[in-house]
Length: 232
Image (spheres, rainbow, N blue to C red):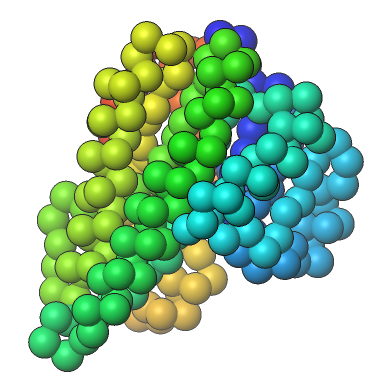
């Protein structure tokens, strides 16, 4: 399929989602930016028409996701790629934590990807094909102390990617995952002030891999999980 003319980015108002959205916009691609919170000031300033900003979207609810993606499709004339960036992180040991944290991580990291992908499928198939790109995590390969809930939910994103790639292999829809190491974001710098952030991966570097997977150059790539660690 040709390069996408329009894409949807979930979690678009966070550091990584914003980097992905900006990279696509710089290529002349129309972007539907979805977020749980209202669009921040920078998004309103940077992404006017023909882009679409939708805040207050709860991607753990199928109806909300379907309405949001239909809104983007109507405004852009149809989209050909979905990038599931929406997610979150909690550090918590099992003994001192709460089972609710596991439910939260699965809802934020896996359920949002499942529901957004399900809402996107009719649009991608109607377009004759497309791309789904999920953001997993390098931590999913091996969880450290306090990382159980987060790593398990991100491991689920990899399995979702593999299963959906197999399901869609004859529908001209590729499904791949990008697995970043620690991303150099303001939140991570605040949380880990003693760490050497120069070894972390930049949001733009992750975004570049996403753009590759959305491009025609990656037309034969599906079911892949690409690790993007920087020097970490």
